Amino acid sequence: MITDLWHHYGRVRAERDRAVPGSFRWSWGQDVGPGAEVLGGLAGAVVADLGAGAARHAAHLAVHHAPGRVDAVDASPAQHAMAAALYGPLAPRLRLVHQDVVTHLHAHPGAYDVLYGVFGAPDFTDPRTLLPAAASALRPGGRLAFSTLAHHLSGEPAQPDVTAVDIPARTPGGESATMRRWVLQEHVWTKVLDEAGFTGIRVEELPAGEGPRAAAAFLITAERPAAPT
Image 1 (cartoon, helix red, strand yellow):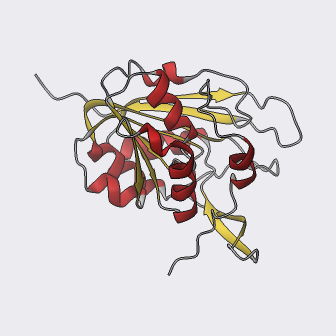
Image 2 (cartoon, one colour; image 1 turned 180 degrees about the vertical axis):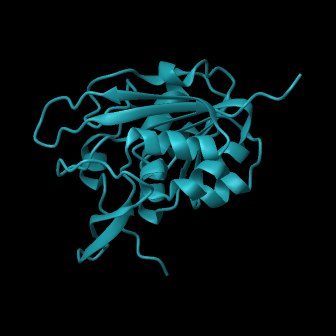
Image 3 (tube, one colour; image 1 turned 90 degrees about the vertical axis):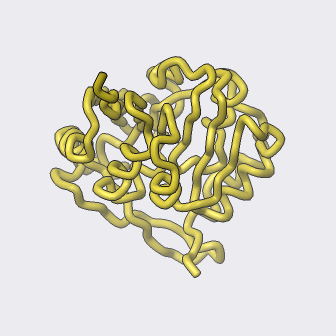
């Protein structure tokens, strides 16, 4: 059995804040930069949050942007259970999917109009595996958007190639562990997106904001090419 290294994440907030968020932000501090308009018009769209955690961003979209459906996909049992406790009543517009993101994407070719992640699966899944799966799951002309760290939280620069680093984590019992995170330079993201078949690739740097853990981020958007006419 795989240890759930996301068991503790977000638990304190979930105990005191059960509301559907009134805003959607891409930045690390959730306090600056653009919002859900980056995803384009969502009315009637089929959308998936890749590595949704407690599904707060997905819940916001389901309530405030009239999509056809938002699938909040996460492999962590603890995060899935937390999302169900917080936002289960938003079904069927919000569907909580407990599954590995890459497995889910491969099982649903051409199913989605929009895929996105907010420091989610694109940070914690090898992009050489995730991005081709995302391209296959998008309909022609569909959009991918995600935010990811522009540098390590320690202040060290991002990696110059597709290399993960180990970051601290905790097991459900509180023991120290590590998990892999991909923090890549802008040109590396552009290259792996291009190799996965995406076009219209754009990278915007979001400012760090305020606070002791402030960090700059990249907001990255791309499209699956439209079908030839």
